[in-house]
Structure formats: structure tokens, C-alpha cells
Length: 61
Image 1 (cartoon, helix red, strand yellow):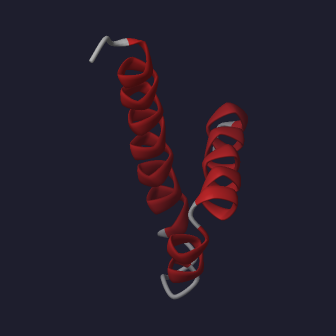
Image 2 (cartoon, one colour):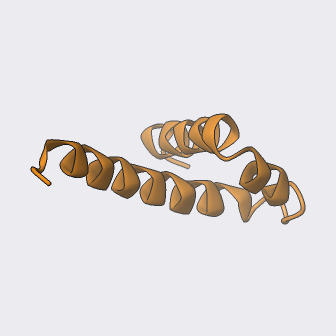
């Protein structure tokens, strides 16, 4: 696997374990070769959520 891709999967795993403890524990039930993809999906959803939260804080009510 490409080193940059591997590092990205590890960062997504770190985010998942830090912010989505229950989801992270659930990934341990998956086959090991499937986990990086689930962590990446979590990372994407987390990133999108952060964008929306930042937009919401700058919009006037």
C-alpha cells in the first residue's frame, strides 16, 4: 500500500478512536482488512460535519 494512503488511513483511525469511541469499538468486530475503509468513511463524515458546524457558527440567525 502507498505510504501516503496508509498514513491517511491511520489518521482516520485515530479520529475514529478519539471522537467515535463506540463506532471505533464496533470496527473491531469487522475483518481486519475491512477496517481501514470504515475508518476512512468515518473520517469523511467527521470532516463534513466539521464543515457544517463551522458554517453554522458563522451564519446569522
